[in-house]
Image (cartoon, rainbow, N blue to C red):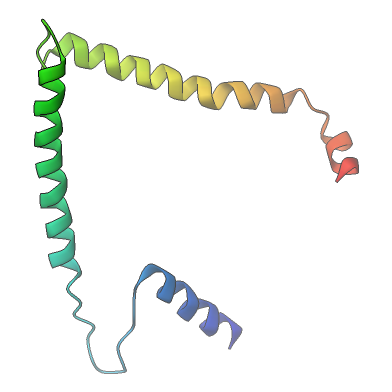
Length: 100
């Protein structure tokens, strides 16, 4: 019984409402997802035009600029994961467990 309650609770949180037995749940999710995708594409086009207006002497579709930005973003993401991991590895596990 507890598992069923937990399942219903999780389904309610994510927005899935199971239909009664024998009835198939046909929700308007594909329509909502299509509308969200269309909105995101429109926002991406508008943002591209805004960024293109802010750049001087560089095209918004310049491959070298896109590659450099991607590499910079990847380097920041790696550093954001590596630095805390190094700090955490310096702590003795037994001391941390005793402290808790």
